[in-house]
Length: 301
Length: 301
Image (cartoon, rainbow over the protein chains, first blue to last red):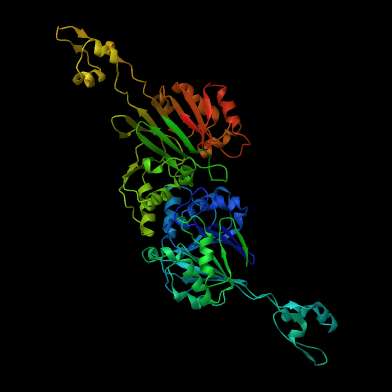
């Protein structure tokens, strides 16, 4: 899994800082998560082939998380996109996009499917044979979801020496990779573990932004490999969290501890601070594996 | 009058080229003309105090001319703007903006007034004692207006030596500046021209983008000091103008000739060309005073 941060700053786009957007490359998918103003330019700057994006996940309808969506959808049209595009986001996102396309008399030449979200409960919103995406209900000023991206286990890896040694025909290989034992012609049963190696452990990534501190999400995040959790403020500005419904770096770290996360990626920084290093210092006091998101940064998960 | 080009390229925002937006500083106003995606960042990069923008003029509802408007309106809110903001644009712009503010539960803390345009005839849409703004109906794929910005004549400039010589009291100065002659106590009439100098000639600027070649606008543009006319294509791609309803550099120059414009500013360049100098070369074959817009360029008119 490869995560590219296109933008990770709160509120308004500036010359050097971009609002929220990320690209998650997971199995054969390139998922776009949130799409603040300027996302299409950030995609270009980071040399990501955005024709490969077929799924866009929008957490909530605050501008710094979706004002770039209509521009991206229009640019896909100008680039003559033919492939279907799926947009997952709060109810209302469809009306906003279609109204603008209608008024500009610029319908897309590709199919645009909206999967509008209203549930307050976690829901599986995307699933194929390799990947599953589940919503993470968050607590913010408007209806907001985080997203949990989970790889499914790969098939077991064939041990080429073992299958040759037992003279097993290739037509059985797929069953073996699926985990089956094999019975030889002489009746001997060869257990699957002798014929295969463990596949790489499936990875998971959770995106939680924007949200105030809420332990409700902890059970959904158990053992997640990488957790992106917003940290708009430091503890010194904790008093701002209640009204704005944002979290501090310390609170994000506390969620990471309770979820037994492998790694905590902090983001959605307020631009009031002269360095984002403070966020890391604060979170590290309770959780060791903390990294800072930053625009253009790439994480291998 | 000072014109700052924030963006002057067609279609989609790119790393180095921005969609249409301009700031016109005229008398005591800072007018924003069109507002493509990324305009608020361009305002910052060009160090323009965007709290001084009180009037936004939107030519048409294609994305490269207005997708940055909702972001700017939201940023004004985040910056705690209190001053009224006036938006002039095609019918529909109000619905688009209000829908997004409603769904993000983020009403502005300042008054937002929409002046929606539907007329196919030129209309005076803004007027005060120093400036007048008139729409210029253009021919494009959707309802589109250009805008003619005209300074009104200043008061005449008082000749301090002359008024002293005739012993004229200060209470008459304002009438003199307005153009009145003065009758002295002895009955002698002093003509205004002896007491005043001509004020600087009022200037005018016309913004015409996007449009196909149309001579209908020529009478409205007579003797304009500076004409910004779109030139999406060169004559070599003239065949694209009919379907896309854009103009070539040559056609823009022809309008400048017929309008007896002082200067032609070319813009809205397609990014298909490796240099924008070609546009200037082409236009110069029929009109001499041609300059090229470019992102960040400033013109004194």
